[in-house]
Amino acid sequence: MHRKMTITLDEAVYDGLYRVVGKRRMSQFIEDLVRPHVLGATLDAGYKDMAADQSREADAMEWCHALAADMADASR
Image 1 (cartoon, rainbow, N blue to C red):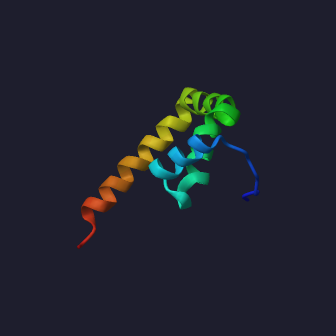
Image 2: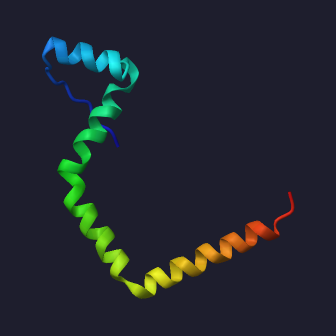
């Protein structure tokens, strides 16, 4: 779900953002910059925990190899 927000920027910053990113991509650009600062620690910890789970990693690797084999056998 997305929420609307109003922010205030210096005119020079806005002009630079508009010039570099474009009007229709500003929100996504800002979100991509902000996201790691507000969600990063939680996601990083989760990814580290997942990588440390050897059973899960083995299952994921088995799935990847099976998928690759299926693709090799698929007719085109």
